[in-house]
Image (cartoon, rainbow, N blue to C red; front, side, top):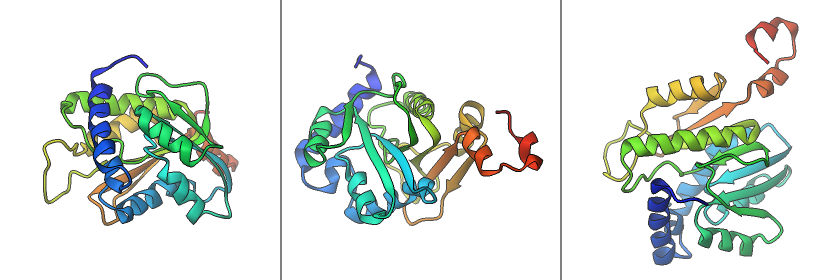
Length: 227
């Protein structure tokens, strides 16, 4: 992986968390197990109607989402894999789930040839640390575009909401109009936003047009699709 300023800053933040809080949710910057479960529940909502799928997580941490999937979707056939920029997280994930595929790579720099039904990102965009807002928005847009290239059905991700009762200088509070315009202009007009759960954040689902078209095969809907 080639160096870039945002990744270098992120590696510094998460390596310190890993070294300081190993064995606790804070090792991946999560306040508690319940926070993680609620976040996972909303991210996984994108594939709740699917039974036989592949799911790739970008910024997987120590693959806690895989355990959540095993615990909560025992009747679904979900093949999970993940990518991370921090080699310590990759090593931990491989130790926990040796039969699964985990990659040490930076998808913010480029997409890769491997594709999955769904690509998910949970908590990746919350802590910008020392990065400027401009740097962080550029980073998040590049990562989302590359993630969307690697899915065949859709992506799910979350941001800290701008509608909060506190502000932390190193967090990123999403610019909703800018994100919506980016999604429509660069990804797809087929999206959902969930801003209806306890955390000060929202979850977004963005779907491939071909996937939405497959859900509406009637000829009356043909005119609404380009593909």
